[in-house]
Length: 241
Image (cartoon, rainbow, N blue to C red; front, side, top):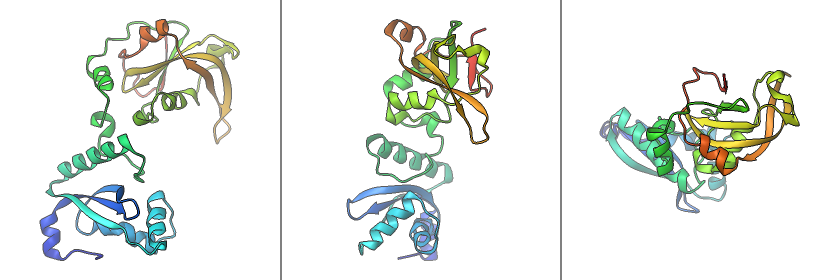
């Protein structure tokens, strides 16, 4: 089947669907659709040179003489209901496996998606970050945060590359900035002690800074962890006054 009849399309309204790999019986893509959207991915794999993890998996399945299985998970939805269910299912599958090839997270996942109870506590009952030592910098990682992958991913998202004045760094091997607070959605989610700073260059050759470091000791960590900082108004870097 490559399309629905018109009566079925009307009955489906908005729906949420999954593409299933017949070799594993597991979903590898979850999406929100209308009309014949569920079939578009296989059609794209057959007609487009463009490559993606999703299309590559479809072609791999076909090369083994098999067909992608299409499953409608829930239908008869309005747009917002469909987005909510899609996001919830993507969150659920990605929390416990890495089987999905979705390149984009679900609708409003960063605000209301799957979280540990500790993350829920951080968001809704975090004590304010009243002061920050002169040796500290607060770095916002909203665009990089990958909740499901743990502390090491927070470190990798935080450690580079940032526009910081060399005068604030001082000696990169014995720097003025010794503590980095990693902030997500206004909450300090991890605290790192800096071993050294180093220069990196972006694709335009502009100099930026990164650091090597490790999770801070318990005393420092508990001073800042799970604290809510004041809004940075789009600035990824905040220093003490």
